[in-house]
Length: 232
Ligand SMILES: [Zn+2]
Image 1 (cartoon, rainbow, N blue to C red):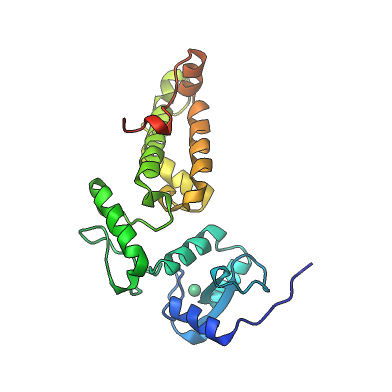
Image 2: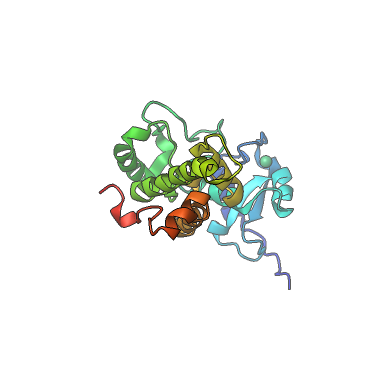
């Protein structure tokens, strides 16, 4: 049964509009101004006015979100960015930018700035990569292991041709990342950290099912090392 809509209190509404700087958070949308904005209930329950469940977006994008034309993963990502002091739109203040340090450490970053600075220090080799707080990319250990499996899968797929698979040319890790983006609703590094285990299991399963992976298993050769051994 559909739940009853409870009006969002004005103060909360204003706070949500402030959170997006009166600008639709959809990076592909250009709507600006409070008059264009509405409050979207991210879990689809119009009676759940918990601030974490509410996202200010323009009326066009709101309609698209209700129709499922904007994915939950996107909406969830925008909300997490906003809560962390980023604006998902490239033209907004506080948008993640790819400056020399990899980050635009601006006034908006608030309490996450410290975390981000630490992450930057640990991730010097990957400068230019935007790291979202709460994402897999924000945990170097998890991120590095995930990247290892992505490269491993690309490698195993590239070698498929010598085991009778149709694919002959080299498969690049970027192709694997794009496939994950399509399947999971976000680039692997941007996915919420609580999806790490599921993503890792999916990658291992894909590796095991390649021709080389199956062949290795028959011969008792392991296809990848466990995370505990990574970087050791
Ligand atoms: Zn919009």
